[in-house]
Length: 371
Ligand code: SF4
Image (cartoon, rainbow, N blue to C red):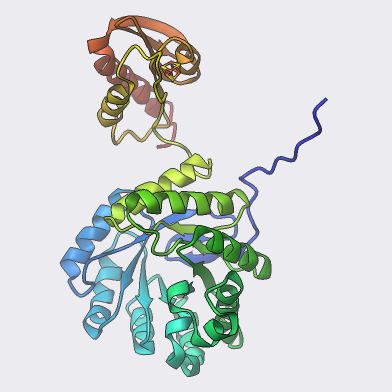
């Protein structure tokens, strides 16, 4: 017979410390959270809050805002108070903004060891202020701003260099008894990034914020992030994620949520199981799948809808799903929970699927299936 093959359940997570980013727990077995970052000027409070509201609506759980100027620092208190989700202030270069962010009630502060030379003598005060306010710190190492000392030692931003930078920075806080920390070690190359996080995961028990930095435009960035996060999360590594795209931040959130759903780290919502089509297809599968996807947009219940081009795999997949269609001969057989409930002409497939999906969704909601 076949040898016994090892199977590691994805639900088996690395044991990390837990920190609280406002009401969102990160690490210590908490669900993996999805975050993004605003693209507005933080000092433009109205525009920033508007974008945070859009991000919240798209499912973002934690939002980061840049804080490069005093005007931005001055805006933090209002933004932190009015945001529906916890706000993290992203600080480079200026220690005074770290204190401002803590005073402003931000849920956490991100600092970058490569850009905070002048922070070193302030670590004690930062640790004291953050500790008093219960504000966690993210140590965010980035390949593009690696500490010059480590760049010289390693020649480039290797996984070892990124990890050494992060652990050294963490040790500066640990010296003052501060361990309310999460760490990221981002690189634009998913292979370097994955190795850096693996090493970091083995070297400490801090919760980890995953990110492929400067991942690129939407298509490339989505693939890079999905590959890297998929590798790490399937090894149990990662407590919160940010997909970085050169695209509107709500897109990052959509991708992040989809990655977690694909790994079963989050309950799947609407899932369209559509075939790639082939020479046997008797219907325009792409068009059908697009129309069904658009018609069911925003559906929150975990519905699996199969859209199949012919009767080879069609009936099988359609039966496995909550709802489905197998097309053939200008007609569509509509399946609900494995039973053919009707056969409709091709022109009626989309509206029939949407109609039936709505009925099933209403029933699921009635049965208390969480959205
Ligand atoms: Fe081809 Fe039919 Fe499979 Fe679609 S379901 S890929 S049309 S064989």
